[in-house]
Image (tube, rainbow, N blue to C red; front, side, top):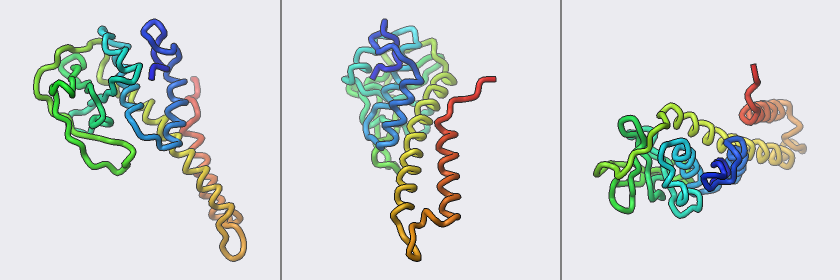
Length: 200
């Protein structure tokens, strides 16, 4: 859980690039669970002025969620023990178990990803400062994109394998040019999703 967290704060001391590799593989496997939202919460906490929440996040005993927009479904909220919500100029730490917030599970198109609405009941016991909403959204975008790239890779591999064994008119459909073009376009899109940005 702490792959991207510096060793001096209890993590493994790597970074977002290594975390992205793990998230890509989790996306490829469509692995359920609160790994991504908890890793996002840890990334926010480690950059904040108060890191006391880190041990529970890193050892897996405190699954977390981050409400980037209070009007939108919150990824991982139904499984979270702690929810970070933007309040004023910081991130309020809301204890779900203590009843600081009400979490209502919401239907999701992806049954492996639980989402929920979060309603604040009382002021948070503490507020983490030093991490802007823009920074949190950037961290979330990187992590979700890595997971989506893994899912896209699985789609490409599965489609290519199926095209080799599915027959039509007495031959595999992979031999038809239209199917080849679709597979090639999928490959290009998948590679672009995983390619590192070009330095300028």
